[in-house]
Image (cartoon, rainbow, N blue to C red; front, side, top):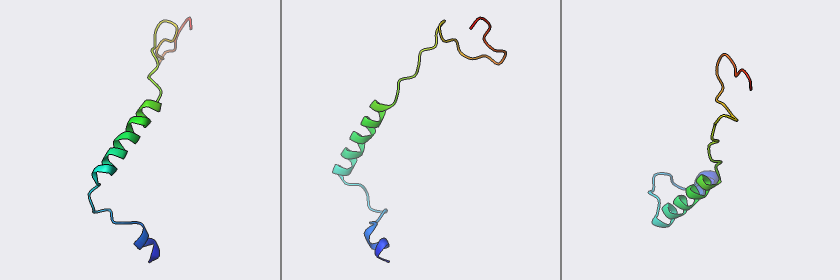
Length: 54
């Protein structure tokens, strides 16, 4: 019962401060994600039949 009392209510809308914090955290996560690698002649995309000469 104590756990139920302490976990809070999920049906309450987020406050403005909570929304700002979420936006900041999401931006930080996005900045930490690696950029997609560029595939070019040195790193050809894989093919089902393989990459001859690679």
